[in-house]
Amino acid sequence: MLQRDGLSLSSLTMPFAAHWTRVMENSLDWPHLPFVHRRTIRDALPYRPDSRLDIAWEDRPWGGRTSTTIDGVAQPITLDYRFPNTMHLHLPAGRRIFELILTVLPVDDTTTHMIMVTVRDFLRSRLFDLYFGRGSRRSAARIGPSSRRPCRERSHPPARSVRSAPTSPRCGSASSTATA
Image (cartoon, rainbow, N blue to C red; front, side, top):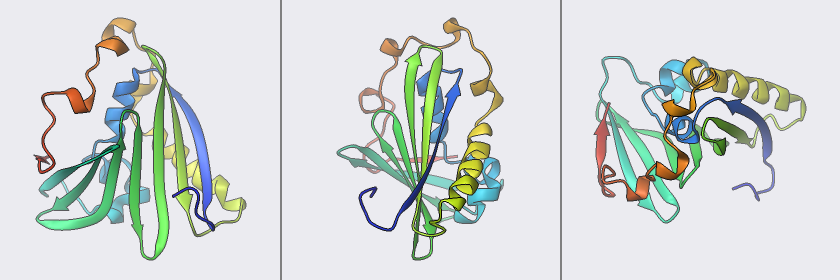
């Protein structure tokens, strides 16, 4: 994806006072998208409080791809989980490319750095990097005050004790579906 000609990238790095698995989990949470990020991707995921959201998981060699249906209608937005610490959101933009890639990097048991990159093939002037960077910063800031406030080491498990998704007995098969 990133090696294609004609793409512009905007990025930001943001620290979080949280264990990296908490930040990663939040980035993979489908139901919060149309509410927390309503100014940026609401139209891509028309979910309402009374809707039924079904999430399908498809195993991939690098992790998994999730897709959704809302009230039985398949949605064009997909989210890739690239094991163990990257999320790649594919946003429908007509014939245009607009993607968001987020990687979380653990610093220690209570500190994480998040790197967020937006990829697009429109509004490619460097002037628009400020716009996309500012929008990404606002979206990241909405991740939640609990992730950004100082935390105590005991409130998060040591990184070595966290079971990864592929080894967790709670993970489903390629056809598993979750309902929110």
